[in-house]
Amino acid sequence: MSGFVSFVGSGPGDPGLLTLKAVDRLRRADAILYDDLSSGPILEHASPDADLVSVAKRAGRKSPRQDHVSRLLVEYAKRGGRVVRLKSGDGGIFGRLEEELAALRAEALDFEIIPGVPSACAAAAEAGIPLTRRLASRRVQFITGHDVAGNLPEDLNVAALADVHATTVVYMGRRTFADLAGILMAHGLPGESPALMAEAVTTSEQNIGWSTVAELADRLRTEDAGHAPTLILYGALSDG
Image (cartoon, rainbow, N blue to C red):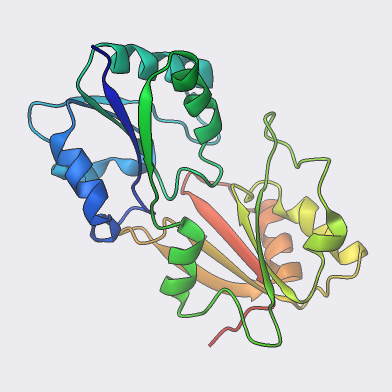
């Protein structure tokens, strides 16, 4: 008899931000396939009898291929029982959720999706700011800072990203932000626009710093990229 898969968003790292439904699925799981950013204290909610399988994928590090992760998920589901696919933040935001759903659907395996606190929302909360501002920021947009090859995507909607009336959140963009900022400033985004870089949000290694788009771009051109998960927010932000 086939098992059942719960895709669980673990939030940005603080186990206190897990939803009640997420905790319930972790406690009842027979197997948990988890991302690197979903490990540590979050896995303390797992049953001691559960199989814990790391499928860690981090930018700049050797990682398992997505097809391997999807195949492993299908194999565990076919064994029966309750399987949790634990994803950092919310799995539907740059979490490769679609590929894994397609793999389960191809095998007629049942699943559910449990949302998590998006890292962007957690970063704004930790900085003490909203993501939208009345009459100033009427729109929020999430983008990925790199393509499958690790480069700045070539199909960016530059006009939208240079909109001074939007708040933009760049996921996984630390290595490419300097190039992105140069393009945006050439298309009208003021270099003095506020920018916030948030690293390891809600964890003990959290580091949040204010800057401007131009200043942050200059800094990141020469700074070691490091390995901390990083979000960059810019645009119609309030620095409190």
